[in-house]
Length: 174
Image (cartoon, rainbow, N blue to C red):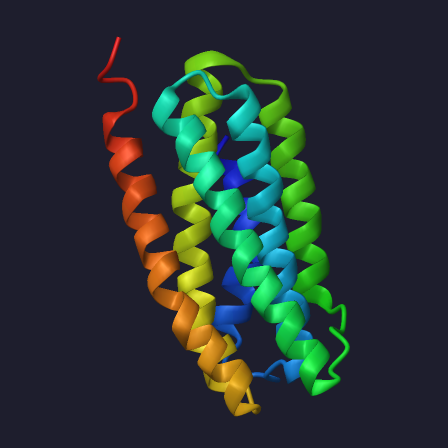
């Protein structure tokens, strides 16, 4: 399981770790943002339908709502700026990792599903925040794009805190 979590977030770690290498341009950042949100939307939808714990189901629903909202803002902004999101190694890796995570989650049920989903959400949000702080926000050239990234950051912190709380309580309930 740890290997799947690692594979699913490795591309974000690469983005964050390569801050001193070639920085992504705004079109690539847009693609990374939309893809990262879609990965969490897809996992959230699965958690809503397959989770066995009411709090896990509610968290999944919140991920769908919140990340859909961020994607709506991002799409509206890139449309306004006439920027076409540009696929890149990071966005492709995120998509692949998200598909791998869903494939794994679909094989699980009950408490095992809940734990795997929440463990992934903790690791994923940690890496998203790392990528935002070290690469995406510093690399954004357009002020409106940078402001969007900065403005959504607190929601990702709240998601991480909520996921960590759920992670600490799973297994303690019968």
